[in-house]
Image (cartoon, rainbow, N blue to C red):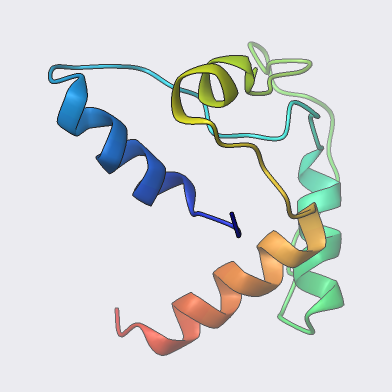
Length: 97
């Protein structure tokens, strides 16, 4: 079977499992804000920011555990950070705000 998007897999699964469910859709690898910024710079979008110290209460690391998505939906992330940034920018560029 070819690549199936996470939302398509989730809607199909919900037909058999009605109700509210929390399923993390991630790759299981965290990334920093700077890495995401590198994705936007890589795509030649503007990057206007200043590096500062962490703010009180900032989380040191946070990422999605994708095990439930694989187990319940049969879905796993197949794309990396830069591809995700490029696709998000392409989608946003086509969408009026």
